[in-house]
Amino acid sequence: MNNTRFGLVGMTLKHSFSKQYFTDKFAQLHLTQHTYSNFELEDLHQLELFCKNTAPDLCGFNVTIPYKEQIIPFLDDLDSPAKTIGAVNTVVVKNGRLIGYNTDFEGFKSSLLPFLPDRPIKALILGTGGASKAVAYALKTLDIPYIFVSRNPDKGFAYESLNKDIMTEYLLVINTTPIGMFPNIDQFPDIPYPFLSPQHLLYDLVYNPALTTFLKKGQMQGAQILNGLKMLELQAEKAWGIWNQA
Image (cartoon, rainbow, N blue to C red; front, top):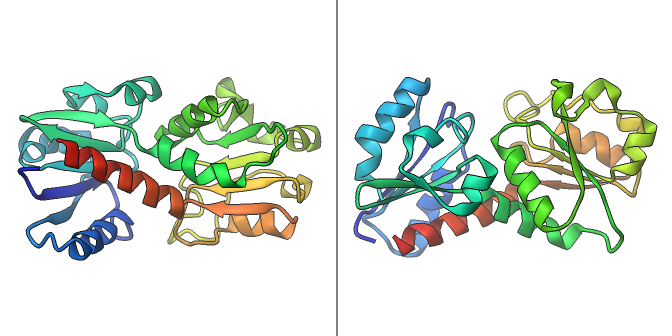
């Protein structure tokens, strides 16, 4: 690793996880020359300029909402999972070329495994953005059938179509949307919570707050709950490994 500059690309990053995580990691490893910066970009034009002018001077960077899919045309190459998923959350800079990876699916998969029941289970994926694609890819590798829930019913179930039969059949419910994220902590995905049960597992990719309203409402029905913090830590460690191989 020749370069020591890293960063995070997104739109609103004031409460992001990555900068503090990697700053602490650099301190623990006594990497005093390493830096990690937030790059708040307002639109696609700024994203394109960043990829052309700023990114080549970095060792690597992370990508978050809303640019995980939108950044792809500005990259030089993708690894196989990122190409299949169609979303990127980690970029390594190698000889001036920007190469996209997806470590979200590995973080999600590893964090979910200890909580899966022994019996077969089906999943509802709330949302159809970049994070949902990584979740779907991970579920596919685990042979867990899934269906998307979206405001666009062409992509799966519509929220208003969810009923007792569907909720009884799909016992793993994963929120991949930013609904309920700080500061909008009173918001929650519009699913029929009374049909949840102790057999359900609710996984919220949101980690701030640690206990979202989505998880609280599931907990009230006896469901097992899990937030996205462990996933974030695992995907960050995978990103660190990729950067160190550059």
